[in-house]
Image 1 (cartoon, rainbow, N blue to C red):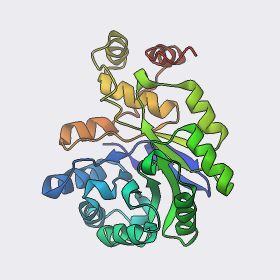
Image 2: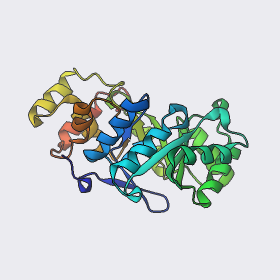
Image 3: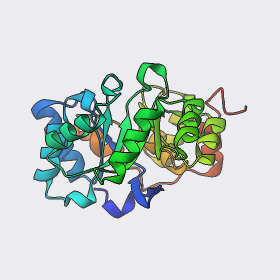
Amino acid sequence: MTSVTEIPTVNLRGEVAMPLLGFGTWQAQGRRGYQAIRYALEVGYRHIDTATFYRNEAEVGRAVRDSGVPRAEVFVTTKLPPGRAGGRERQVIAESLHQLEMDYVDLWLIHWPPGDRARPETWQQMLGIRDEGLARAVGVSNYTIAQIDELIDATGEAPAVNQITWSPAQHDPALLAASRERGVVVEGYSPFKGSDLRHPVLVEIAAVHRVTPAQVVLRWHVQHEIVVIPKSVTPQRIAENVDIFGFTLSEAEMARIDGLSRRAGR
């Protein structure tokens, strides 16, 4: 079982420590979802990712309370649906906190660019809600660098996080560098959906370390300091996904995995 101290963190603006490995809860609803989240906390996860759109904030909140883990030790993310942006941000965060039965979330994200636009006015509302203490940090999801620049130009402040799809096949060093230049932490979702877990490179590296290709993919994220949030409701896979801190990928292995991306050489 993984010790909490073994999960490294990345510092967001304002000295908010965000665990590099989290537990995704998309489609984890009802009793099965609750049990999966409880088990994730039991085996060592301390970062839970949900969203208003997932309709499981109540399950997340109950699992955190019932786990016995102090609230301050669990990093909780939820998200603003883009369709409810435009003056309703305060109502949405109040509803999320009510469902979670929490006084604050650690990270609140704009789930998608509303109407495919950056919407600096929504970002300004997010910053205000953070300043009130309802969210320790705020960020975005599925934004482009150009849209992030629009938010920065309008408010002088960059999102703490941009949650986007990421995997070895989607690895984009230029995008990663541009994000970091702006002080934006990249958080990757769907790490397995975008991966060919039967690829010979992943299979070979996994065999060397006596782990699974999925564990190699997650370890690769963490060593790049890209936050990753695999999801599962299967206990065996939940435990396997958090058990990635007993091995380290070499620089050569990291480079081979980077090379699975068409963007890596740009």
